[in-house]
Image (cartoon, rainbow, N blue to C red):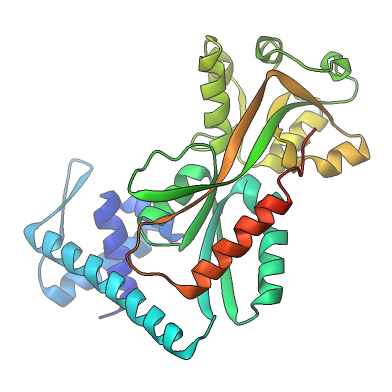
Length: 304
C-alpha cells in the first residue's frame, strides 16, 4: 500500500472534506478522489459516505483512520531513533509559512540555518494562516510559522517575535504627512485588504472590533491575495491599506510608499506552530533552537 494513499486518506478523514484536503496537500480534487478510490479498492470496501455534499467516515473508514494515526506516529519515531543512534542531524523538514512570513522573514532564517546544517533538506509550503494551521493539524508539514492568534489547544504555539502593522499610503496622499492615524480615518478611504483566511485580515478585524467600529469597510474592500499585490495597488493610487512593517523596507527606501503608525498601535505575534508529539526529531529541535535565536536577534527588524 502506498504511503501517499494513506496520507491522502488521513487528510480527508481529519478534515471531512475532499476540497480542503486537496488544498492542504497541494493536489487537485480529482487526484485526491483517485487516491481514495485506490485505497477503497485495496480494502474492497467504502471508507467514506458522500451524501448531500457531506463527507463522513464509514465504520471501516474509522478503523483505517485510527490505524493511520498510529502508523504515522510510529514511522516518525522509527526515523528519529535511527538519527539519534547515528548522531546525525539530517533528513528532511517541511516548513509551512503564511505569505508575509514566507516572503520577508523565512528566506534569511532558513538560508542561515541551511548554511550551518547542509545535510537537512528543507521544503517550504506557502499559504495563508488558516491553511498553514490546517497543514500542521494534518501532519502535512513539520512546522508552521504564522501571523496572529492560533486557537487550537491541541497544537504547541510559541511566539517568535512581535510584528507591528502600519498604514501604507502613496507619498502624495493626505495621510502621508501624519505622525500617526486613527483607524476610523483610514477606513474613510477606499481600503485594500487581504483575502479571507489571511492572518493580517483577521488581526485588522479584531483591532476594528476592539475599537467598537463596524466592519462594512472590510466587507467592501478591494480584496487581494498577497502583500505584493496589496502594495502594488496602493502604489498605483487605488486606495490605502494596513500591512506588516516587515514587508515594506524596499518601498520605504525607494520612497514609493509612506508608512504611518496606527493610534493606538497595532501589533501581532509571529508564532511557531507544531504538533504535540511524544517524540523529538533532532533536526526539528535544531531548527527551533536556531529560529528562536534568530528571532531574538532580529526582534526590532521592520519597526517604523
